[in-house]
Structures are given as structure tokens and as C-alpha cells.
Length: 208
Length: 352
Image (tube, rainbow over all chains, first blue to last red; front, side, top):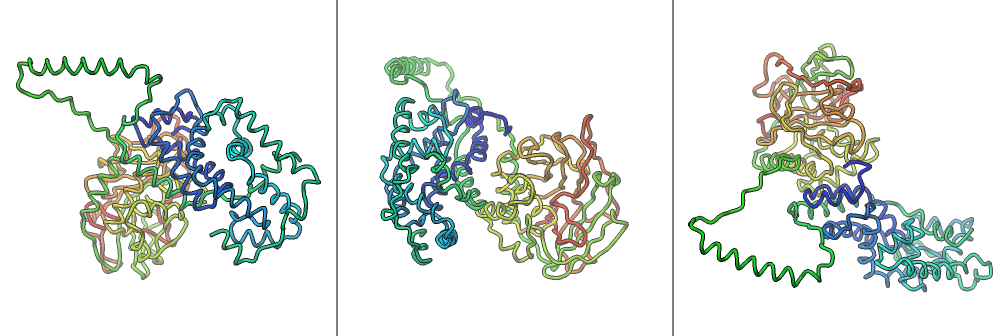
């Protein structure tokens, strides 16, 4: 694989030379995993990232040759796979908002986090953020996270989710308006943010 | 700080995939790749629905015409399409070597001995020298190296496995299924300063060259190598002694500069030699290259493997084209250093 070879060429080549698809994997797997890892637990992120490439390989015949970058296509497949787990994602975000400890964090990191007083402010903000994401409509959250975490343009998000760019724009606007409440100080209501730390045992229970 | 910045920092410290997770995911993909036939995936036609009636009509007409032609054809033979010529790729020859290895029987002995001939242009040694290594199974081995002033020195038991040193028994306990083996190789090869694929290939070469691998492990190593992306076959290659060999390597353009090349005989799975490449042109002189003369199992550090030649064989190495970079110094990852933990050799013709 040439480092500068566009994804479209690799995918086109993989139709006659299937092994060429491994180049797409090497280029995008780690990034896709990191994106998924921010949304679900590590085991599920690994499974979904792996499954994404298997599905993508099977559907490589449908890849649009005029799309040089395969990211929107891959993220679109990943999002379709992720849809079965959106309820779990909302539940974990709600738990984060309620307890102030991220259920997705590694157990050791979570304990260290809960013990670090200096990060209490950040914890409160993150808990509030988790609360907003938990109650946000799934379709708005998808657009927002692709924009913020996958660094995708409106057009790329449109390609990934197979929606018009205008719809991307309106969903993103709605999602950002909800988030904007975060930056206003009165939104950080201490009572609504139960920042008490969990014990190690409880933390492990969340991460398992 | 705006809302997007806050969101950008949310869970931004999540770790990337581990080597094992990456290897498992790639293995899953490569399994799907292995099942796929070239050309199986066709580009999806646009506006398919519009063409369905027309295509159906055309097909029906074509079937009718074809049926009539068959009925009216004077020849009694069925006409078959010409067989597609097989394309020789690295994966094909590596899989062939794997199946050859899987049918061999294991050897036994306290030592695995390998005799090889090598050149070391990276250190200014262009004249071939002979090296004989006895790897002990839990006991001290011995190295006799003509390129080091004719030295003979004891060497500790141990084998290179990526960045790790493993014992003979640990070598034998490595998985013999290519997927799990590749996951172990990925873990052992990570963070060695090379791109991962190149490091993984180097680890595989290190286990195949001068190492007492069993036939099942050798088969799994060849299969694991066939699954690495970018592994390339050099057509009509020859080893240092001019023997015809399959040469596979990871192209420098794919993973960086240089790397290991493996010479082997696909029909016997025997490793014929290894080389450390320099620059992006595989025809350029290597930094180091070795050819296996003989290898096998013995019970003392003074016994030689069966078929070991008395004198050196002439080197017919003729690589060298204009514009090649100067050979870099240093031995390949597959090459053991005197005094360091060392590896031993599966032989041309001898079972491991």
C-alpha cells in the first residue's frame, strides 16, 4: 500500500485483489476504535470496530468511487452497528451524570479520578455533559459526536449517516444549543450533580 | 471555553486499541478476505431498478439464443471457459510452505545446530564467512563465527521473540493457529521502533531462521506471514548461494525504510536464508545476508548437522544496481549476535 494512495483506489483494487483491503484497515482501525471507545466500553468498541471492517469488506462493491476518503463510509457502517447499543450508551451516560464516575473508564483510572480533588470541577462539568448527552435525541447526538470527535465536515457526516447536509446542519444546531447550557454558570447546579465518589468495588461493577 | 471544546475534552483520554485487539480485528478481516474470491465484489450499478425489466428481457433473449445455439452446434463437446492462470503472490507461496511444513515430522536433540554462510556489507565485510550455532534446550550453547576472527564462544539458552527472550519450551508452547499466534507476535513486536507490520514480519523471520521451530509452529508462522498486509513476493529470486528461492519481504514504501527479507523453498518449507534490506529497492545490496548451509538436531556442541559442507560454498550474490544507498550497519532482527540470546534454524530439507 502506498501511504498516499486514496482509500477509493485501495477499495477498488480490493475488488480484484481482496488483500488490498487490509490497507484500509491499517489506516483507519485505530482511529475508529478510539471514536467508538469514547461511546461504549472497551470490549464492545473492539468488537464493533472489528465488525465494521468485515462489513465494509463485504460491501466494498457498493463503495462510491468518487469518495476518496473512506472515513464517512466506515463511520456510517459503525453507526449502523452501534444503533443496537444506543440504549446502553444512554444508560451509561446517565450513570455518569448521577455518580460523577465514568462507567467507561478503566477501573484504576476511575479510582484515581475519584480521589483527585483538584479535578472536582472538571468532574462536575463532565457529569453535566454526560447528563445532556444522555437526554439528547440519538440522531442529534450522532451528528454532534461525529462533528466533535471524528472531526467530520457537514458533508462527510451527511455521507456517513445518509442524510442531507441541511439536516446535518439543523441537527447540529439543535445539539449545540443544548450543550451551550453547559457554559452558563447557572447550569451547574450542585444538587443535580451528585459528585460523590464510588468505591473501588462499585467502580469495577460499572466497568464490567 | 465553548461547548465544543468541552465536548472535545470529554473522554479524550481513552486508550487506543491494544496490539491484541488490533491483531484480533485484523485476523477477523483477513479471514473474510481469505474466503473472498477476487472479483467477487462488483461495483453496484446505479439506477438499477430502471434497468431491471430491460435486463430481464435481454437475458431471456440471450438464454433463448444460447439454447438454440447449443442445440444446433455441430460439436458434441461442451465448451468451457479458459481456466484463469494462477497468480503467484506472497500469500500463495507462504501458504504452500505452510502446508509443506504441516506434513513434516519433528526432530529431537539437546541442541539445534545451524550452519550458515553470510556477508555483512553493512560492517564492511563483503567476503563470505561461516557461522555455526548450537542452541541448547535449557543448556548453554555455542557459537563459532568465522566473521568474528574465528571466535568460538558459549551462548546462553534463549531465543529472540520480538523484543523478548523466550526459552526453548516457551517457543514450543506458542500457539500453532495463525490468528492467536499473530496476536502474540503483535504483542511481542510492538514499540520496537519499527512500524508494526515490519516489526511483526521481522519477528516471524526471527522465529523461522535459526530457530528450533516444530513443523506445526513453522506452518503457523508461514500462515501468519501470509496474513500480514503488504507482504510481497520477489519473482525469480535467488539466495546468497544462487539457489532458487521464494523471497518475501515487506516493501519499504509500505512500512518504512529497510526491513527483513526471507528466502525459502515453498515446496519443502525450508528456510534458505534471510537478508536485511537497505533503501527502497529490493535489488540493492543488503546490509546483511545469510544462507543456511545445513541445520538439524544433535546432542553435543561439537556435532554438525547432517549434510554440513566442509568448506564454504561460492557466493553468487549479484545484487547491486545504480543509485543504491550505502548499506546500513548492523545485523538484521533475524540475526543472532554472539553472546546475546540466540536463535537456531529450521533446515533446508531437515524437519524442525
